[in-house]
Amino acid sequence: MEENVYDLVADFYAHDEGWNMVLRQDYAEGFLRQAAWQGADDAELRKKWQYMMMFCLYLGHAENMFGDLDEDDIIDGIAWCGRNIADFAISFGVVQEYLALLNALLLYLKGKKAISSAVAAQIAAKTLLGEDGVLHTIKADGEFTPTEARRALYATPNAPVKIFLNIGDMLQDLLDELHDYFQADEFHVDLERAIFLYQGIFSEEKPEDLETDEFWQCFWDYFLFDYHLLQDDQTPLVHFQATKLSANQELLLELRNSKLALFTIDGVNEDDMYICTDFLTQESYNLNLPLEGELDTQEMIFIGHIFYNNTMVMNYIRCLRIGKLASNRLRQVLRACYEWFLIQEPNGTWQDFVARHPMAVRHMTYLYSVSLKLGGFEQHTEVQNYTPPVVVEPADAVTLCLEKILSSYHFAQRDIMLATRMWLDFAQEEGTSFQKPEQWAAGVITNYVRLNAVYSYSDQRLAEMCWQVPLVTLRLTADKIKQKLKIEKHDPRYCNEESFLMMLFSS
Image 1 (cartoon, one colour):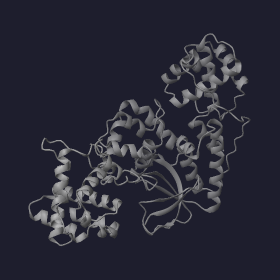
Image 2: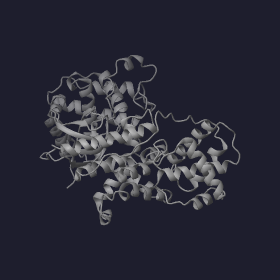
Image 3: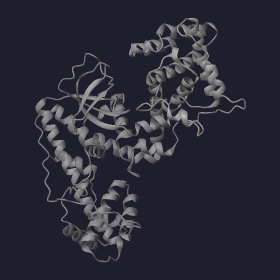
């Protein structure tokens, strides 16, 4: 059964009874019942309650009370809501409607003898609402106009993060937009590759599990937040935000800054938030988690996307039971993986590693939660103190060949970047001019394919891909590059995500 407006009011006060100090629940409900008696339908009542909730949030941040309001407070409150509440879009009509609601509420509260004066909203309306239909004093973004420097100086500070009142509905709308957009034909190869990375290498799920809602919910959680698209190496969320197609742009901006986190739960604080510790960095944060109250969180590890200033996670969160011994082994293997990653990205953080290799983190956490017999990360390398080359513009002829050949065969933008690094490393070591760039590009691509050890291309096929370079030439240039750079299998300087997963699987 759909919630009515009074259910929404009850939920608001049940979450934090402290709101009664700002506006008593019986006053809020009484005002809405009076509006209903006067003919307001459910949609109108919901809008009135939303405006009331917004102003309560403002008063909470301003540490002010309804009985103390003057016209300057009303103006400050409207501007604050415009800057901080995603659901409040400032315009002449919206502000006019908001002021009418506040005026009616103040009159109701005065009638209940809860306040002594009810004129603040009426006076504020004279300042804000011009007879010409132009909004004065406040701009569309909630900032004050240049002539209102004093108001700007004494304005209530902004909330730490943007506030979304209807985040559940907005999130579902956004997910529907994303699903529709990324199921277009142009993303077919990306979806196939993402399913392979998510399910193919380790086969976490049985084939029939591909039909379950849980599989697809978890897959889309990975694809939208973690997967890197072939064409631009952006996550789908970042890519979609750049298109400006979403009707939920502000929420999209918030979500694109989320991060995949592996964490444990230490307890619950006085605000019913879970006290969590990041499994990899030991950072502490408090999260609002969608968990059953009786769930035993001892010896459990959680994987989810944290956003909203490290206070919330997406609805989908995976929890796995893992003992202390397996937990220590998991931490050791992920530390070894991180150190391998640091060879390629010397300035990389733990967050950079998780963002670049999300399936390594997901898969290894799952595997260590179900088996104690796994080994560690057994890979070794002679590469030390690697400094990635600086990519200069304009690109040279070999780099241009690499991009054209690799992109035409659906190699990722990340692959093109890593192959380009290999070429620049070699060119710097060799220090001579190069003729016939397609031949050197073929040598680079051959080494790149061989070292990553996840492709089935033969040398003959590579020669055909590289604009029919003679097979003997391809092998000569490939061998020269390999010897000069001392390229290893799964070379940490140039290994991609698939190669990284293959190393873990072979370990």
